[in-house]
Image (cartoon, rainbow, N blue to C red; front, side):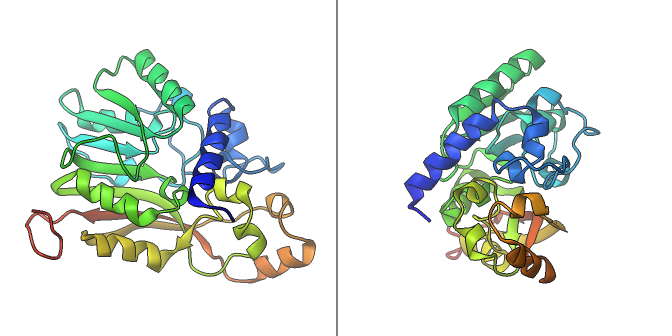
Length: 278
């Protein structure tokens, strides 16, 4: 498609635009980034509205799961949210950590960081902060986080292995993550894989589920658990922007290959040559 730098700049530009859109426009396409679907419903994400800490101004409809619901956050924890957007997951995590904890949101889109900071100010949450930076090289010192969460973000990063390595770095010994993301269990049509818009839409950039879980294991994490898995159905009025009628029919007749997963894993609590956690 293009090189990593170009991909990242394309995603940054697209998500800068998304930060200024209404939630309904974002929900009607794949992770908010593709062409607007005329069938107005949310393709990817789960319903946040019943969770304590939910704030409508911070919900851009960009997720593909509810990682905070599975993240086992305790009072006093330090939580890092990767790709924090307008702050939705951070504010929900803040309810779990309480006043004695801390939540750090990291996003590489300045417009998103500005929007999240405004939302935090409105909510008076002084122990929630937002930092501009890449999640492959977080602006955070090592072994600072008890929990890392992320919602439909790692699939946008070309070097996913580097992200898991940096998650390992910032987690305290014995810490853990809960991440919702998009993965594949088969081959996407080439026209979807090569479409920049579908890359920004979290679909073309997804990798095989076994490869994704393999990166986690290779990094040194243990107790890897799939907490949730659901198929993602892309509607015809989005597919038609990339495929002809025959190709759409062939795609729909094959087994579902796009899935949303929520995966949990722990940084080992003891040091060994394999994990290198010393």
